[in-house]
Amino acid sequence: MHKTNTPHHKTLTPSAKTSSADFQRQAGKGCMTVHLVEDSYDDRLFAEQLLKNSEQVTYVVSHSTAAELFHYLETSGAFDDNGPECKNAVILLDVHMPDMNGIETLKHIRTHPLTEDMPVILLTGDTSTELAFDAYQNHATAFLQKPLNLEHFHEVLKNRPYQRMTSR
Image 1 (cartoon, helix red, strand yellow):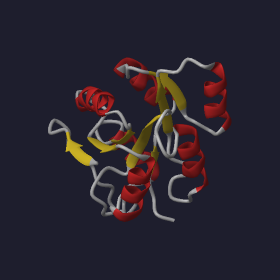
Image 2 (image 1 turned 180 degrees about the vertical axis):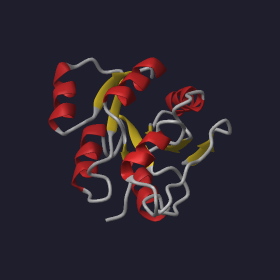
Image 3 (image 1 turned 90 degrees about the vertical axis):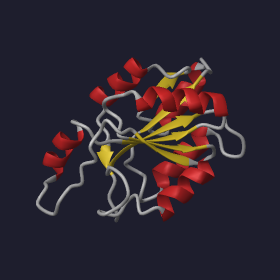
């Protein structure tokens, strides 16, 4: 796991006076964290490079397993108001991973109080309609084909806005 800061973006931190709606408008102008969960080193590197070039992405936090993602989210302070990154986040999740696959990970995300509302975009080379059905049945935000296409990713963000991470 490593954190990549794209230097061409300013990190916005909501103040106590910033309303949720105001923060969402500000965040749309430059502050979003993408949690990339991908077991393939080459695919992870490719997606990181694309995301780093996106004007909509401020941070890319890479994880090679679902366990790494959960550990990071629970221990990094990512949900704290003064946490280390943007409070707007999206999980970009590979479907076919060892140990815990993307659908199992999605189910876990949806049952955890800290992550149940986080947008999750599944990413796969699998074209199975059954897999896509399972993803949406488990409340995936979107289902994209590999290799990651930045235009498609931006379209998902435009149509299904990300949500603020908050501690509960």
